[in-house]
Length: 77
Image (tube, rainbow, N blue to C red; front, side, top):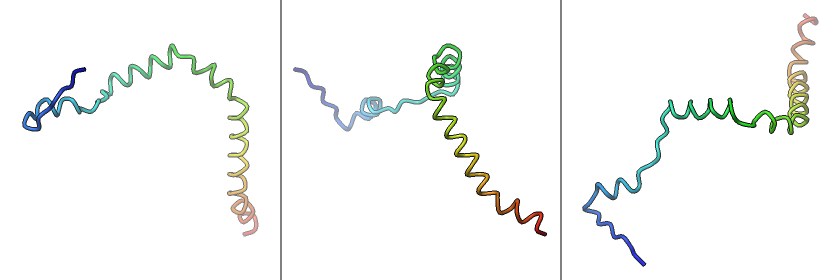
């Protein structure tokens, strides 16, 4: 069994081991474009189409209830 000892005086090695992973915007965009073009996200969305439809119907009903007092007060003026 081997173990590695890091002394605090050696700040270069201690800092490089705990270095956070940085995301470059170009690589992230390229990965996203590759996912959109070649991924199977469309098929997985079709599985949940019924739930998306019900969510949309609920959102439409909530917005209609929210704007109903405004729509009623406009002709009453």
